[in-house]
Image (cartoon, rainbow, N blue to C red; front, side):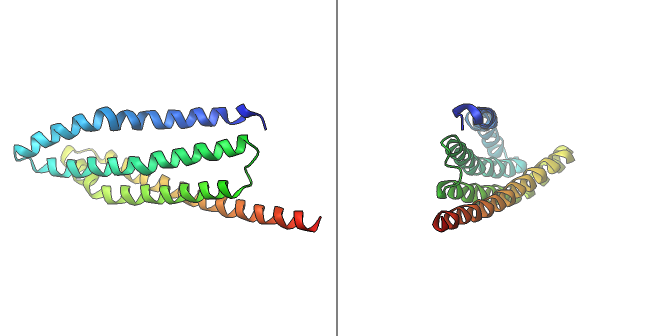
Length: 163
């Protein structure tokens, strides 16, 4: 397979990584220190926002790890090693990271509900639910692909032994 056949997917990974990286480096620290100041002033909502920001940072770790495993999977495809145990391992890790992200966003939902009620923004709750659900769907899809790829590898090995 040509080296550039997965170039668009690799660029998509970069597009997916940049906004979260910018949030983690610039937006969340500024928001965190503003919220800390509000917490010292006795604002009760500030403690909820601190918890929310910490969960967002915790969610960024498996997100970037999943993007890295996806990049490794694309490199395997470029090297014509798509049907390998390394690809199965990458899919297994992507599945695990997606489930972790879904779990962390499920933990964040009570914080999101409190913030949404105080600001009267019910759409904020929907965004949190969509992210938790979407990451769970990605995890299920990765699990199905993992199983199919493992069965294809086993079938390939059986065929190589019979010939």
